[in-house]
Length: 351
Image 1 (cartoon, rainbow, N blue to C red):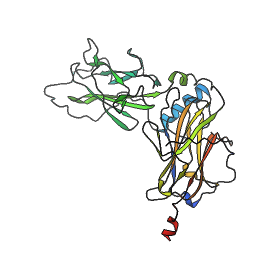
Image 2 (cartoon, helix red, strand yellow):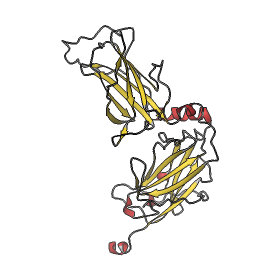
Image 3 (cartoon, rainbow, N blue to C red):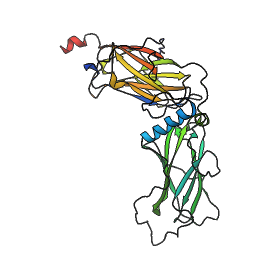
Image 4 (cartoon, rainbow, N blue to C red):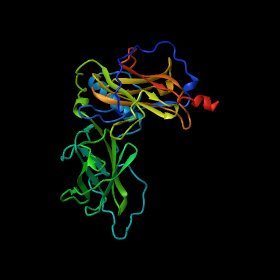
């Protein structure tokens, strides 16, 4: 049974932070997840101070992309591989296009370039390809990735070749990934990479990326003004979270062998471009290895953080707190606590 715990914010921890030998092997991270509309999700965590409106949001987004070594690829060259059936399919002379290209758009009209952000609330994103040197009759195949995770092959049942083209060119639709065989009603926030080629011409391909985020228009315009003051609500601890965001084993008491304790909360009133900081404490000592900061891309959203042990390690017995701050502010937005206690008699049994 899920029992929400929502304690009022307490005072920020003070005093010099002293590493505790009991924090060895304990790490923490922020896991972001797309909130249900209208609550957008986090992008990749990295340290950043609060910024405001359009400049802050764009810098946070570009910083996340650059920090992760991710960008929009256009026609990245691949090592030459002798094409299959080369005696039957000789490459065509290069056309007016200098190199293979792949563009994306939320509409079926070909853009001059891929938008910086595409709204994740859309159900379809259109891809426009241009593959000089490949005949227009060539059979095509495409695969896609979310960050570094392969999502599989892209069905090209809605492929629309460009009429009159002397090489492979046209467009196809990319539908939002299904979850459990059911349409998700939008794209998961993140960076998507698509590769298109032909089994008969493996040396010719186009590869490019697009960024899907909630409320893309508002992010590009600065995210809009928050509807109220910064706040973190419905903060709970549990032993895990499902792929759909449901809490597993909601509790305020865990055993040392729990392995992981997850904190889940909802925030609002945060200026896009700001950062939320999550800190974990055992008694009065901060577990500094678990501290994490994340940039915020919209005024409302949902966040996850977790505290976990290394393989074979145990959480030390004691009283714990997890605290959420806005950037470097000293007053917390929310605090909740939980206990870690060995089962009765287990200590004596080990002695």
